[in-house]
Image (cartoon, rainbow, N blue to C red; front, side, top):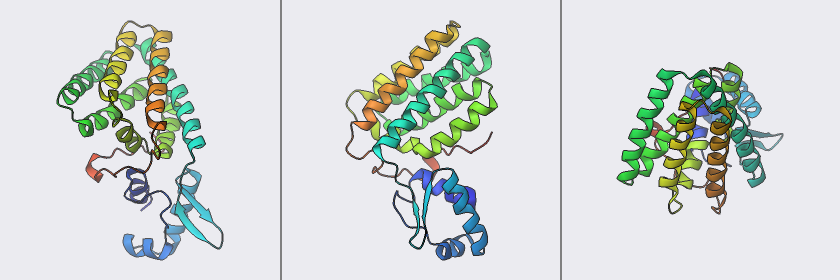
Length: 224
C-alpha cells in the first residue's frame, strides 16, 4: 500500500493539503491500521506527508521557498548526471535519448503539451540513469517525488513559448554529451533546469494544476 499511496500523492490524485485518515486508508487498501501508520511515517520521511500530533495527517504542501530549494538540488544532481554521462559516452543510452528527442519534436510540432510532459520525464530519467551512479539515482528519485515534478512540468509548459524552448534545451544537452564535453553538458543542463524553474515559479500556484490521469504520471521510486 506504500507504493499505492505514494503514487496517489505524486500524481495529484490526493491534492496538497488533503487529509489522510488512517481508518479510511485501511479500508481503501483492505489492510489493518498498522501498515497504514507505518506507510504514513515513511512518506513523512520522504517529505510527502505531514503528521500533526493531535490534529491529523495531511498531504504536505511545499512552500514556494521549498520548491526553489528543491529546484536548486535538481539543478545540481542533473548537471552532475549530464557530466558523468558525457564521460561515459554510453552509445545505447544516447541513442535512446535521441529517440526521445525525435518524439518530443513531434509532440511540440502538434502542440501536444501532455505527451511532451511525459517525454520530459523520460529524458531526465535517461540522463540520470545513464550516469551510472546508484546514489545519485536514489537521491534524484526521492527529490522528484518531493517536487511532484510531472505536475510542475505540466504547469510550466502553459507558459508561452516554453514548449519549444524546453525541447531545444534538451537537444543542446544531448549535443554536448555526444561531444564528450562534460562541463558544457553540465552547464547546459543546469541552465535548462533554471529555465524550467523560472517558468514554474512565475505561476501563482504551481502545484494547483489539474491532476493528470494515473496512466500519464511517472512515479520515481526511492531506490533503483
